Image (cartoon, rainbow, N blue to C red; front, side, top):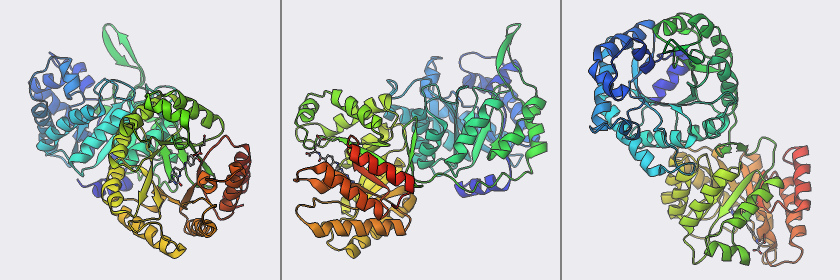
Length: 565
Ligand code: THG
């Protein structure tokens, strides 16, 4: 099944998924020794019987019984065989059963049970390797797509999706598990999750397990506001309890079914069940919903970046303030600290800038005599844990950007892509792989074009190049390239004209506001005056120092009036 075919299917009908596999097999008294996955290999007939029932019930997609078939989980059961082979064999069983039906088989990937850096000690690269190994086995069997689910950590979901995308262009669905309050175990929000996963190339996003259907409705509604992707729900049949030594789920299929109209209204396209559901549930869902066309979702939030907790949207009438301070340029004490790998000031800059209303934090670790990559990673790791604000990764070095984007548990803004050859050939594909949003600098290997027209030409070329990786102008913020006014007054006018051009073309714009006043006294006044001029031309964001009260007042007046004063 191609990604396009999957997208079409999700538009055409409510896609019916299967219900519980492992739990249902245990309820049917499958003999378990070691992991459920290896036990299934010993009872292939029981799996065949269950999956045949799901296909007969009307499931459009069933999942391979490989939920825990990753190296880390299997090691808990002292599994010493080949992870790839186990996945291939299990997937082959499902594919064989489904071959008599028009049902697709998606390879199921789930949590390792460990937390990944920056939230835990499992290295991100190692996690990607474990998921790649599993996905390779599933692919060898010939699965039609992937279903990454029950993820309690956005970072782990990212790792699994990146592994799948490194291997193939098959459809990939990603579901996380949220608690009653609507966050994953380590605090990822539904909006952050979908913004991040959409940018990494997921084909559908949603939630499964953990709670019953009632708690999933507000989560899905939040997701629907900021993704254009099809939405998925796979609730548990209520909450589990122990009855005479057996785990039972509180909800019967009629009660479960009573929530589905609400899911439909909230924009869900794919429905199945998780723990406690069985072919009877899926049969009734299919009978009532299979022929219903999912709701058309018209608008969604474009131009959003995300930390693992919150999102920031560029444009849409709000001015975005990117705090400039985590940058050693011109700060002697901070430079000394960075040379000693001391992050105290970074922590202070992060919280001060947030208090002063920053919506994003720029992080620049460009300083001679330090390991820029190491310090960038330390900073991202710290900020991901202590600050809710999304990050703007400010570096000229592709290897720094690559490591930073990999580690960042969200969708970052890359600062920046220009028309220079190495930026287009090296940095742009890296940014695309990790789904970053881009700051576009209108300069190329010949330097900064002097005229407005020549700058627009460079921008058009970069937009063209980026579109080859699936980028649209919604994923870009164009930099007006502010220079100090003390050396060239004409340059400021070119910058303003470019901002105007962005506004006329509906593209977001940014400027490094403090550049304008380098070498001048009373910098705050000059910066503020230039912000007002930019706002008048439709500027939608600035990299600036949020501690200036004058600046903040101008921003609040922009926000009151819409983007153009
Ligand atoms: N465009 C893009 N990114 C950028 C810039 C840009 N990143 C860097 C820079 N320009 C924007 N950031 C800063 C950060 C600090 C200063 C200026 C621009 C600055 N620092 C004071 C100094 O050097 O004297 C120190 C002030 C302090 O102590 O806070 O001026 O244009 N895409």
